[in-house]
Amino acid sequence: MEPGINGGLLIRKGEAPAEGQAVNAYVCTMQVDNIDEMIVKVEAHGGKVALQKFAFPGMAWQAYYKDTEGNIFGLHQPDVNAK
Image 1 (tube, rainbow, N blue to C red):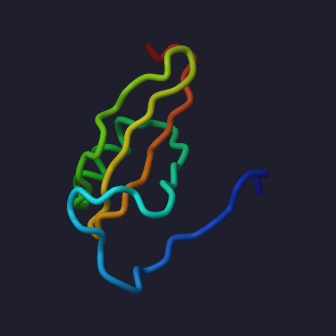
Image 2: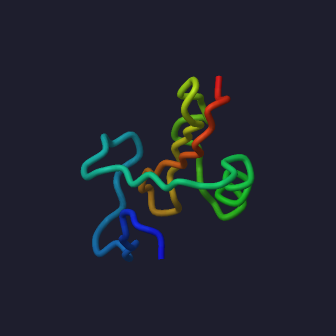
């Protein structure tokens, strides 16, 4: 097992956030090997764009999505060639 942050996702126990509501907890960001492939999978399973893919120049690609319950999450692909 690789060292790093471990965690899990739980089923929501209350109402989903209202459309346009500010983030009321934290945004979980997951590192992925290929952000473009993951974006296709997220959208195929009902995820909606919260913030289009963008570059942290010289560091990584990043994107934010809403899941089917309205939770915002991030995708992060390290890439020193991102621009």
